[in-house]
Image (cartoon, rainbow, N blue to C red; front, side):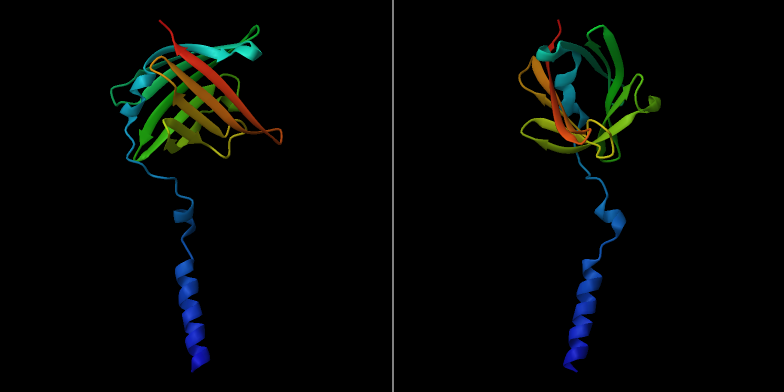
Length: 166
């Protein structure tokens, strides 16, 4: 009898320890409000001074409260344009980027994965680089956009510093 009880208990533990794989990989849900990005409204100029990279981002909201932006980066004589956005689907918030000439013209969607210490962390582990984008207001007139991830097998971090354009 004792062995049957032990087997029965092990079977029950095994059944309860198994989780539906869909639940394990379900993105985090959030009650996050898009109005938390009100600080982002307007035009921002900046870049990476040490690499002679300059950038411009302009952000507006639409009638649904979603954020739409345009970005432009000057790399020497080359100009890279992107369409960016922050929007909510159900209870999930995404940062999107569509960069001219990259990803076969497809938009990349980064899920808001964390909001800690004033940082808004978006991630897409499947993207080549970056896998993480962090927006962090540093004052009422400045913010940092940090790109992180693996590139060619090595960890890489790039920080863009922006200030409000007047």
